[in-house]
Image (cartoon, rainbow, N blue to C red; front, side, top):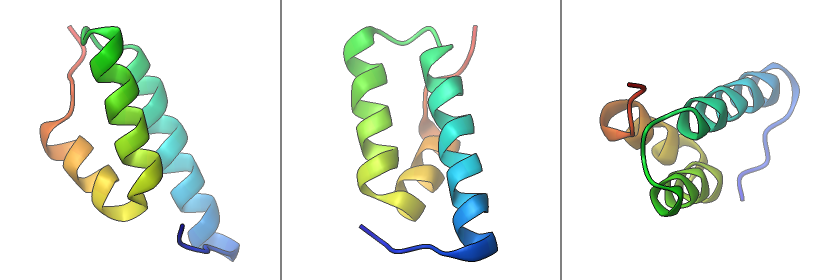
Length: 59
């Protein structure tokens, strides 16, 4: 995992929490929700970008 500190770390944490809440509130199946959250957590920057561009959307 990437080591974020200071302001960059807080921004990253806020984005991950926002992404997770959005993913959990989407209409995707449970399996897809788990996969998206794992993608965002395992690949911090790239995962967030991919989720933002192609992730599950709210109904």
